[in-house]
Image (cartoon, rainbow, N blue to C red; front, side):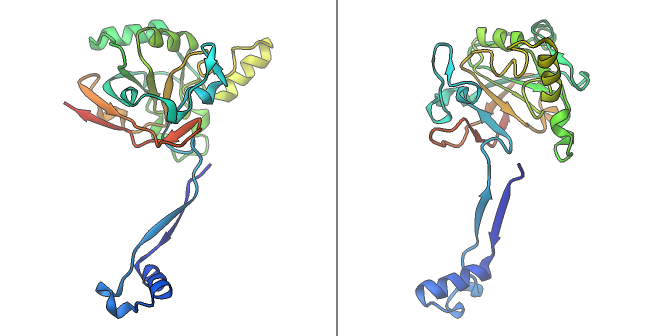
Length: 232
């Protein structure tokens, strides 16, 4: 799932210009042409990205699930709040009650379209091969509660909004029951989640705006995004 990019420098650009237009290097400033890059591998979920409801199921909330290009732009530019769960161990779950308690601690009352960012500190392990197995996750009940408060975009600095999937797989197989594996993703709600965020520890709990516009990839289940916090 690594992103792969091919780089062509100014010398390569000069060669292309000469081949295409017959213009030699001596007629180019510094003898250089254009530099260009080609992304040869970029999955919609490979980097920091925004998931659309279509990622979770084909039908969500009784309607055809929205794809990334079908979502309203106002969801992706809104006030943010950071909730601190760095004390959570790998595999722990963030519950509704814990979310409510953390929001009360920082003195933030949720408003519709607030963007909630769950700080786990696991971005420090982004380059580690076991990164997908680290971190805590948010329960389906907590996700439902956030949605009921009007939150439509929520994010985390771990690999997944859910608990590590190998643990949820063990639990699902142990009870042989639907709704255990990928529980928060498949809680039948039309919401977006941002996964693999970085630097949440640099933010105050409140008093900032989040810009997290995903690339408009038609028909996609997700898209890469450059997520920026604008601190007041």
